[in-house]
Length: 138
Image (cartoon, rainbow, N blue to C red; front, side, top):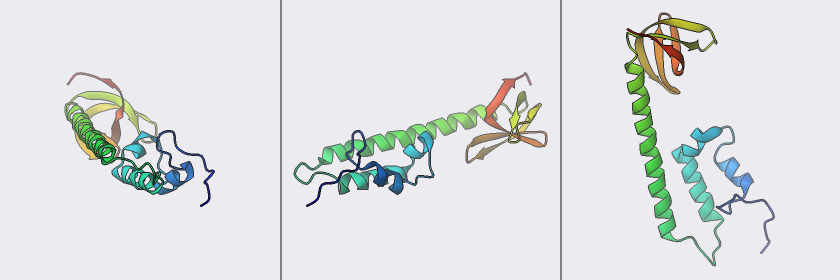
């Protein structure tokens, strides 16, 4: 039996190179850590590299699954909150930047729930909720 000399993650004991490969190295940032597929890949890696003489207890796995469930629920609440904030801006005048970096000022006429969060229709421009810099009155 040969010993592995690859560096391991801080708490999981999973070789870092294997974790990055299994979770899709193209994904970066906190969003990639919260993806369910990332969690499952880490769980499989944890099982693959656990010490057979000291296996991880089922209680630890249940705890991890409960934490994943909490994160998913928090994401859902956050997305609902963002959409609520965006819809409350309909009819109000905002200032923000569109995708090209142009400053846009005008009344919000509609809201779309995009892949990166809510987007606001301002005239012929689309402004993400996160790029709004000023909100005026209706």
